[in-house]
Length: 161
Image 1 (tube, rainbow, N blue to C red):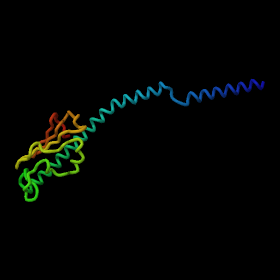
Image 2 (image 1 turned 30 degrees about the horizontal axis):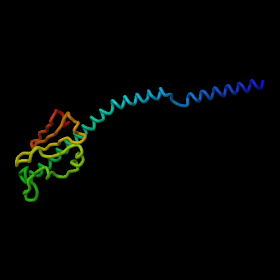
Image 3 (image 1 turned 90 degrees about the vertical axis):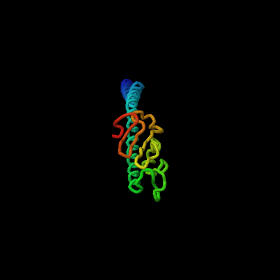
Image 4 (image 1 turned 90 degrees about the horizontal axis):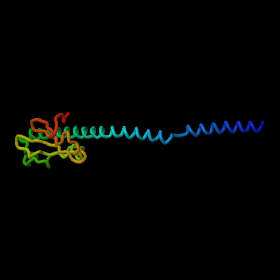
């Protein structure tokens, strides 16, 4: 009888041990299913994220063009010309004379900000040319802003929204 009780205890112990082993981890199939689901989600989310980053950089460049246009207008009220700046309005305005605003530093890796051509006494056109990672933004391309406030983009409408 003692032997039979020992066998029953051993059998119960073995059952408990097997049930603990089975519930202690994941099978390879379960792990592969999770990896596949994560890969599918990443394949959908990453392009969307890249598009959002491009739109954000574009909006920052557009805001910086507006800030530079404000500087040009303030300069015009001082010198009565878009083409002159500095003490006594004796310096010709070129892209090199554009002020070193914080926004220019913020977009420097994504956009090159300059004049489309040197400004005349009565007109200017500022532009933001994509560079670096923003070159792949083929939807809008180069953004422009004129002295009349006309906003443009090389490839599409709605790029200033």
